[in-house]
Image (cartoon, rainbow, N blue to C red; front, side, top):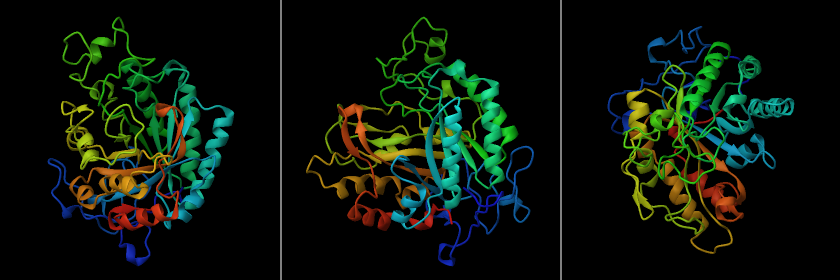
Length: 409
């Protein structure tokens, strides 16, 4: 996405016609235990052989984590690439998103690599970064060293063109609906293998570990739910009471370790207030941060036994946090509530200025800009978009905290 091989994010004011908008982390109370660096005008130069980003102008104030901004939050988007493009989206937004998400089956086929090449071509013109979500649909055992090396070589070529890459491998591994689900030992080994090759080969890259939100864990009844006879059952039974339920940790048993993970991520959607989903419902106040911090209690259940994801992985493990996907459920066939009111009630939580200042570890938010049928509600077409109509788009643009968000040039 970059037009030059070093990431040229100049941290200066937006009113000066800038490349990035920045955020001052002094606007709200800081999360305990981790103080972000003070932003200064600088350039992130190419990484050292160890993978740490350094800057000759201000080495003490640059994050050592791969692709982490010193302050502020990358604004990104998950596009329906069949009908949309980065250029069209940015035209509607009136700005250039920093990150673009796309899904790929892994290992990539020849056709998959061609699609990836085309994706990078489109994003490079817009000056952004790519988050590739790799889905091993043939199982973790199908991922080989050769597959990983082939991918890394291709990604290194994108870096040479100035396009940084986030690699989100086998997301929602703690769910029960994917062929890579609830296999912590094999998952961790595979993630570590890929991460080692990516880190060695692709300097402007970051490995993203992104479990599913733990509410409802272990999501019993899914096709790939762990068998009690499996050796990993004891690994997931973290309190050793002989069962796996909400009292067990839904995150740490799957964590590949600090050396393998550069960023952590969690996708948070507003599907509604009570299950089964299907009704257009206004989100409860503070739902977004309550889920992220393990404090969510609703009519649908009490999730307050969950770990505080933000505290655990940002404050304790020092990992920048991404929201790879987020949006609010809206069925256009239902006349109420008003579309703007419903979606605005969610995006004002997600992009809340006070929240982003109080939780500076939230370094990326990608909106799910799709209008598509959802199997969870019988194939009903759900409009998750913020820019799907002029009225909604106008309100969304007006509500974005521009001084806290990072856009591409």
